[in-house]
Image (cartoon, rainbow, N blue to C red; front, side, top):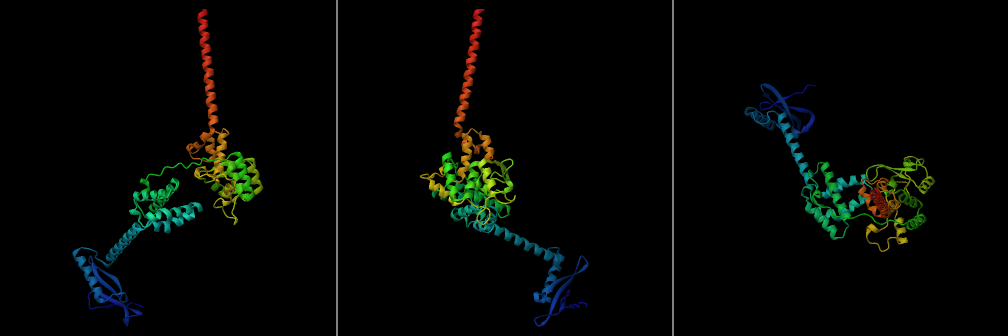
Length: 414
């Protein structure tokens, strides 16, 4: 069926009717305009009467285009006009999005974008600590502010409020690190284009090195007491004490990491970002053999639901309290924790004469500076080396004096 077009009272304006749809009790009309461009006839559709078009509006639209053609200014066809309008609309929308991005508050971005991703990619203790630092210290200062308005001054306010509350320098460092991570995340997502204000803020100085390590007697008592509470907790403690393995590394261990033939345990994707091997003691080997082996991808240690363990059981802290190992201790660097077992492993190695470079490799430290905290424990070894050096020098000096004396006697004889 051919489409029938109807002329109107306006030159170059015509319409066709919808076969069934009504508008204002009449068949809905579809309007189009006709004119010439560079001497060639052109027809362009406008729209339906139900969309607001009528013959008069179509005439005005056509007249506007003809005027633009005569003057050579602006869009000269309906297609050009629509393209220009679309471009302007897209620019306006882009500008609105840009402004909305610039005005998004730190709180909005943290809660809606950054933190949900952090929860999926970080361990429970890490994202829980970040949430706490944000809620207690970061949000009260910069939560309502857009990224572009946050300055180093505000970071100093976060530092001061935490310092006034007697928070540890390490906690202040961590809070600043959270802000930096959020800014970097926003920058990667095009929400913010500048640098993090934390880059111009001095980090608080701290000495966070743990100094406490266990004597052999303390370690025996601790392990024996832990064994009465939980066998799997005892097994993990033994691994840390005898192999220097971190708690997080223990949680990640699968049976495929255990090499009984060579007596090694492969630790993958460790804190330093590298793999390393730990070496079993006879007790560790026996413990692992008694527990397994399981399937290569099966976790060695699991929680009661069979899932990966998130944190060391509170039973360990209760054992420490029962033994009085932290009685009267207020400095956290001197308190016994699960990590003290790894620290004890390194301390015993150094006291037994193992060189620091070897200890560094066994612990998986990225630099020797991290291992040098144990250097004072090798004082006897250093003293022995210095004494031996002095002895060799004295022997050499005596030999030299003897040769000079012999030469002098020979000269007198001659």
